[in-house]
Length: 251
Image (tube, rainbow, N blue to C red):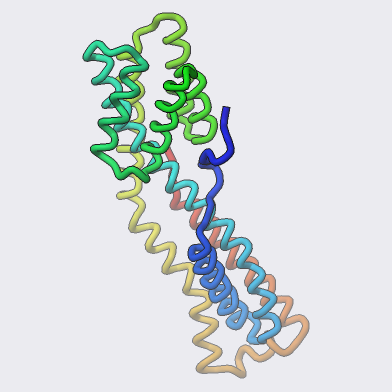
């Protein structure tokens, strides 16, 4: 059972500095977009409310990145755990030894060290491995950890081959990580192109504002024109979001 102070990986807890930086960057971005599309301080100020979506997106990216790192660290833990079990240790002893080995590989503030320390602490308090792993998997929200926990618990209760299960789980996680890395290498150029293309439209509008302001004046000085620009801004943000989805492939 999770306790107060435990880490939940489905939410991102920013520091005050990170909150400040993300809010300032989001306000600056939406203010600039507001000035480009509306050329009016009041409307640009209203556009700054879009910082909410910026913060939401950054939190989602932060959670995704942290889970990815946790999955890689968990893979290393599985290698170590498998070695300990192969040496003839019991499951409890193997988990304790794994923590000692992980402390050699990672900094003590690393998520996997924090979680494995919590598991060992619970074992020392006479809690079962099953309950400790279930709590970890529930809070981690990582599919591979959740699947491993379910299979590990079933194998332990039925006397299954824990070494084989851990090796197969490690192999599966390793394959997924390697495939994701290969995909990232293949689409990195397309992701860069998408970012460049996403700035072409506001760049063109800004160019006309600076070189031919009279050409765009009907869009900024009439009611119909402002409605057109609101719709244009909506389509721009929507197309940018769709473009990001297209070049993002998850395994």
